[in-house]
Length: 611
Image (tube, rainbow, N blue to C red; front, side, top):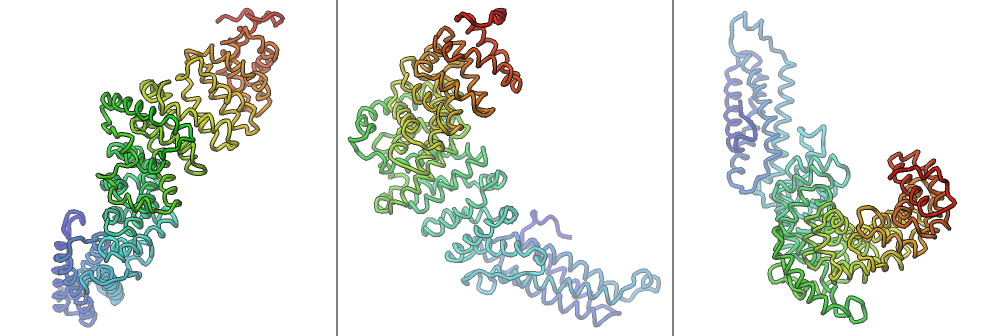
């Protein structure tokens, strides 16, 4: 018996099968009964031997061999040869007792004929897939259905395509990669089969094929289709796919970078290990470089243009300071090489990039921004790395200049970075200092989106970002409060709720300047708008009540609260909202106490509440 398929070389397995076939032939020649049937077994085994000998010669002459279907077919051939050997051995001259015990029938031979014939068919198919006649030099993809795959035709197509990607001519490799992507697009089962049958390594090898753009695009698209689930993404990571992807992203034409950036985004989205590995391979640097291409054009008419020289000087000083203290990230580009670097990566394609169509350039930035978004999502470390490049300034400029999907992706990236800054004080202090030009540019654009764009998908991430930065704003920075208060009255309930949540962060106990911010909210006429918000649905009421409570606790002596009958509203909330959210009882009671404390004419029984 052969050992484990994974433990033996293909040549050794085939050699063993040739030896086994010779034993079957010899036993068939020595048969004393069922001689005709044994002779037919011998003929089938001879046909198998010829193909096995061809295969062993081919495997020793080819450097890159796709082994998966070979091992599966050889495993079936082994079982069928062993069954044939057992049968023909029964036909030798034996004692009467043994003949009675080991009865052989024509039915047994018909079964073995069918099995051996199937193995001959499988070997014939294998010879076609491997192109043994032309030593792998013929063009075209061999597609047919072998007996071994009669119950699952998909696997034979996958084998054929993967074999062509790994062993075919370059044009066939491109076609096979496209076919693999199309097949995998149909359903997750096809994706799983493609990965399990070893499709990832040859696709990664094709991705490195920098002599032909179409080959890299086909490979990147196929890998993108496969990478829609963590386990499959992990397979790409384990095949050392991340360094290959980063290398191609940094040194390829734009048409290749577009699907590769999209692949980075999807892999980072579905697998935290991939997210970390990409950052470790410094993928953020080429992504920011791609985004900055033709972004920082000298335009004195824009706010960013007016501050550009001063901003760049200050940012470079901050970059040097950050880089000297950062233990995990050493990249310190100057402003000029942020959008003009390329001597080490991508420099050969700069002139080609300048001449690309505008829609190609935009699509690359869309995918690059999405990749940064997915890398920053839930990761303080990656968010820090982005802020240590010119990433923030670049994102702000794109939010200002662009529209549609690119603007949205940039806003979502900013939202993730600010969320990371909210949870990490070191990042918050380093990246969003009040005197930071990059931080100022980001905040200016967030406020512009909130105030000027009537688009909830864009306003919501901008509102969330401002809320995440609530602890960075000094008391005098009231310009961020007004737009949020205005959005409390937005006709879109989701926008209004997010505005309430953001304002909660200004007025919450976690904010040292909560008293000042609460007064600003009230001064911007936030209470009447907030009272109208309480007429909405359950989620709207919940966040409206929480914000009202914070205002009552922080500025309970303000006459606007009494005029708006906030006390009555909170008493109602005590009976309705608190019933559904018992954890709010203490907060509501505390707010009512503060209102009682500062205003006359309210119910005295509430005075007994102790803080």
